[in-house]
Image 1 (cartoon, one colour):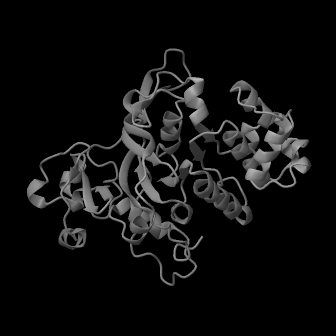
Image 2 (cartoon, rainbow, N blue to C red; image 1 turned 135 degrees about the horizontal axis):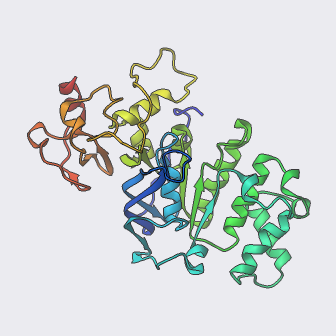
Image 3 (cartoon, rainbow, N blue to C red; image 1 turned 30 degrees about the horizontal axis):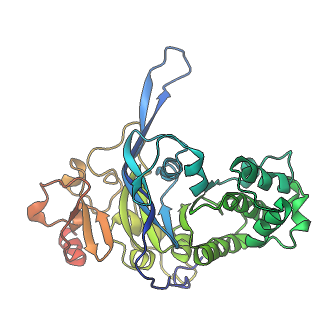
Length: 360
């Protein structure tokens, strides 16, 4: 997908947060070996992540495999419990556990549509079950199922209701999975890599469907992906994760046109671009770190082409580099303030281009 040809999201009036996670942190304990006496080691999957989802907008969560994107998605859906942090629904603290009232408002679409749909049941049954569980089937349940299929562009509905998942194409299965998520009339839809397992030829159709649901039904959508080009195409806002932490957040066009964090620059340099004549000038080193023992300081410093000594020892504060554009990078902190760590707060903006030239 060409970054240059991606449509620019239209400006909208101020929106309200439907779902917001603040300071979300999650670790998992894993055994080092197969022995019953093997030591358990902590995997630092997500650390101090804050994400806001607004009505009628798509927020993309972007990063490499292992960045913690799916963990954040499951924390927001309350499929797993956070070790620390808070969730707010409509500005109020989310209820404890995962009650039906919460699940009905926050639905998740998983990466593998074949694994998430029961293969022994027909499409109709897969859509009827959430209606029955949440007691929201109004009137003719068959008409409700048919309407769900029309909403995800599976027409005529009668053609699909009686089919098993294996009789559908990958794109059709993913549309059924989205329809199942819409069945309970949610206000938030979390789509975890919804097109990564689909052929390139049908990915655009699913992305356009999500965009249509955003515009037509004013859903707050979290789009989890490793593909920053598709994130620009679909999302209003992009949030970039690396090794369990947020490194940059901005409106999608601002972030892809003027990336502030070196990791975001590397992601964009690695994105396929048919119009690119020369090889990208920026190149990273190595692979993402192990979350069993993440690096001290900035977790990106072992791969960063602009690494400084402070990067190796201190976690960078989140810095405002432009309007609604922040990055967690020491390059954008005034040298006089570099010994002051501002955990989670936004430091004053400065001219990022001058600062980057100074560090080079």
